[in-house]
Image (cartoon, rainbow, N blue to C red; front, side, top):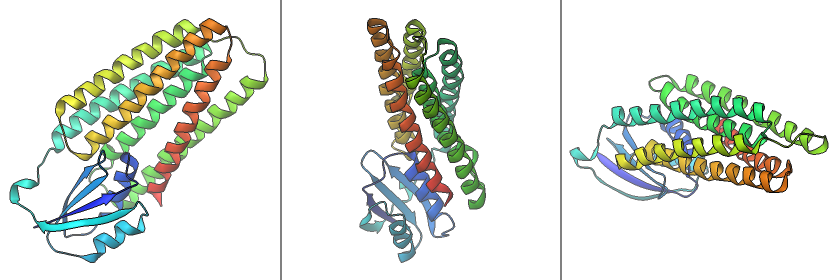
Length: 264
């Protein structure tokens, strides 16, 4: 058994990880892939040396460079699938529940910031769901799921941006800052709990570190919506809410395009 380490300079979220998994799937000599997203490193465990691995990684244009190939020890390949799956399901369920809560209260309170944050939660849930649901299925199904998820997410984000534009140019009531702040604080607490659980697991595996990055980003967005709520209170204006909503929608659009890359 061999172990080859690659540096992947453009790998910074679960989208790139899933893209690499889809690209390398089907190579019989590969036994395990270990991702370290924080340090942008990929370790491939394989039974024989094959230049096809490096060629496929280069084709993705993610800046993959081989560091070294050494003989792997038998105990280096660890099976943590059940632990990872349990944590990922927990984070997925929390994200989807927050999506339902935030999109409902967002429409009720007329806060585009809450609606945008809810779609960011949905985007995260789609990425986690894609990784979990497609386990064991063929490449064609995985790519189909990726395309559907990406188009769905993109459509929602574009609808959201069109609503932002409409609210900018038309008369709209000032959003309910109390609901904005309270719901965003709840989302902040929930994401903080997720981050604590993930960090407590001390996992070095791919999805776990990726999920930590996503959850950390969610916490920043939650804080932004809280700040927008405070500014709405102080200024009695709709614009702080619209500005934070625009920023979050653009983040969701960026994520949609990255997911769509998986379907190619």
